[in-house]
Amino acid sequence: MTVTAVVPDPEGLTLTVTAEFAADVERAWQLWSDPRQLERWWGPPTYPATVVEHDLRPGGLVTYFMTGPEGDTPGGLWRVLEVEPPKFLLLEDAFADADGNPIEDLPKTLTRVRIAAREAGGSVMTIESVFPSLESMEQLTAMGMVEGITQAVGQMDAILAA
Image (tube, rainbow, N blue to C red; front, side):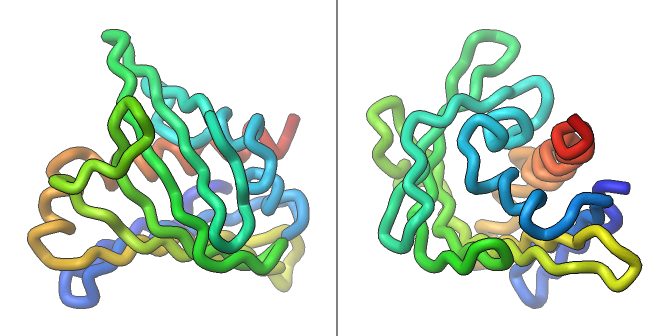
């Protein structure tokens, strides 16, 4: 099933991706809580991720870089704001330089991840990105964020089925 909706909302400054899985909530949570599983889906298929640090506790950091087809290695970091395993995660998401420091010239987003049981069995995951401004949303959209997150989440089913 995987991605069932991708909803950009310029007025609300959000992008919401919804995915449904046959796996239960606890299993879906492992996609975020296990750095080796996170590496298998975070980033589009042509930009696989390598997780460097993974502290999924309030106040913790998750740092990573992706390796592109040309050998480029863009980095990112999440500041973990709230965690309620296995159902909720609140992150500040930023681009990072080679030393793992936020790149201040690029927008940060607030990311809310919710995982809930489906009445018919399995789980539903929503990933909501909140942008600081319409200009930031347009900039990240132009950089391929919508396609990237859709492709990334689209890889989850194969991991859950393994």
